[in-house]
Length: 212
Image (cartoon, rainbow, N blue to C red; front, top):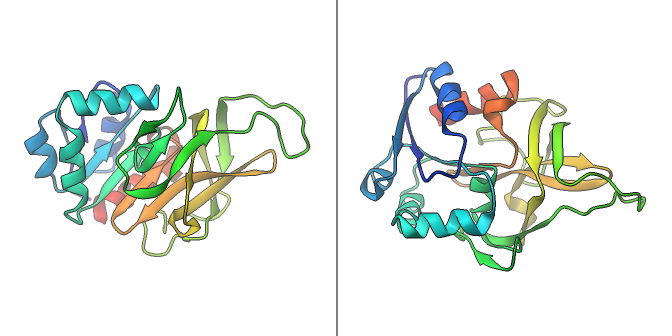
């Protein structure tokens, strides 16, 4: 699918891997830190690694925070990846309360450090985990070409907790906890996992984003 994805370059994401994945799917990548280019994008991808607050501070410092908000109001397709997905929420509790973009009501909270049986488990949650449809389901989203149970790759210590469960497109199970794995709200999508590191399943999600 031939389409251009504008990837926000704010030094808080794995730009090389995500760019290669988009190109593998036939898309064209436009890396930018220019707010005007963000506002005018056909499709926008917000990557993110590291701490939530630092990512938000950098977006503000570069004039990109308001540009991403303006883009989201346009109705054109948006994809947030990892911390980029968490940024879609109102706030995060990581290292104090930090405000997000506020696309979806709710916050970002730590993954529980024990399973539902009370036994400790590793945090961050790292590795492959199968996806299950959330209350939103996958119809009409960029996830609608994958099957329940397909596994994707996670690296995270915090997870989104929307106020309304209807924003949750997919979950994964972590020792009995249903962790938010993907969000969908109109043309705005988020992946807590890394689609660029998730093999054929991740590439189909990116391909669907190019076609959305």
